[in-house]
Image 1 (cartoon, helix red, strand yellow):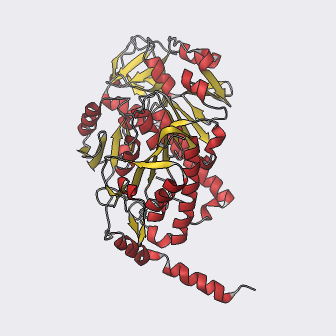
Image 2 (cartoon, rainbow over the protein chains, first blue to last red):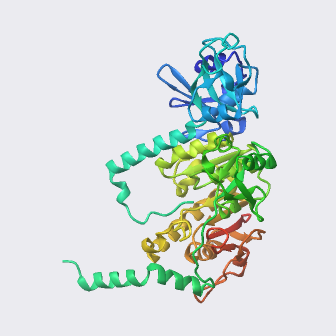
Length: 179
Length: 310
């Protein structure tokens, strides 16, 4: 729980999470609705709103948590269409792509929003935005963006291919198809 | 020493009961002339995350040409797109899901989903789980089961991307659903099946009638377990993407006699279920099922079963 609160605080934000409904499953945190908490048995793989995972000393947020922060007062930058696309592709943000939110300072963490105010991820501010005059300078370093959904699928499928090669399971014929 | 005669007989029956000609003949006897169908990619707008028209116009502004699917409220075919619709910001934000048109039908057949307790018995890759959450407006509870460990991460990613918050996922066989000690108002059985030649180009060369029978047996086991965990008066939607009657009408005919369920009327795309299969007369109520021969969509079968009181 502390890991989540500390992470949220980095954005100068505060979200009221009901601690009694947060469940830790291995290194992952989930926020369950009252009904879900009451009804479902233990031993789940995934449940409710996934908040993020702790790996070593670091907290890796989910995009649901980032969206929850984005709904409240927090460090945010709204970027233009082209910058939003490049950010999703893993790129950093140049000053010229920022449409709204120029008062962040070097070292701040900020959410990156598109023109529709949808949260695309977050990054770390590299220069005081108000003082930076070079439009072609990277001002926000990409830390996490929604393109990660595609990248992680590739990582997972590579991992599965490796493990199925080791187990020889890809040789089994006539498995039932699933839609 | 292997019995050569026996092996030759086995090989003979394998050759007779498999292959394109064998299956195409079966379809003809069931009333459908086989033809190759080019599958159209389809999407479904997640209306719990965004307004339908807004998402459609955002996609059109990207140069994606959409065509409304006439028999689905939130479904669109992709008529033209210069890039993958699985790599847009709108997709990654969970505003829509990629889901074949026929596969969007089963979830829409349930009545009153909000605040209900729902079992999605064979959930991966999660398209229908997200659709359920969408129609439930993230209320109530969905329990999603998936047997294969390797499919669990993809299912979880799908739920996170689509901002589903009412679902618990278990790595569990649908045949063991009673171990959950829960009763459900609604049960979705999108059961593992033999598939069909539209979605799998090598289908004819790898499927045999024995595969079909094996899948049908497994589906009956899942149906049996589903009936046990469904509340009296609850609903079970059974769906396959198989064209084989053993996995469809014949299984439902068996379920009517064995499981205290009855087939309920549904109003959706597709033809009436077959009540005569290779000369065998089935329960008349099976015509309330829907069989979708490949044409605008892949092949599909769907029906709704009501769990009877007592």
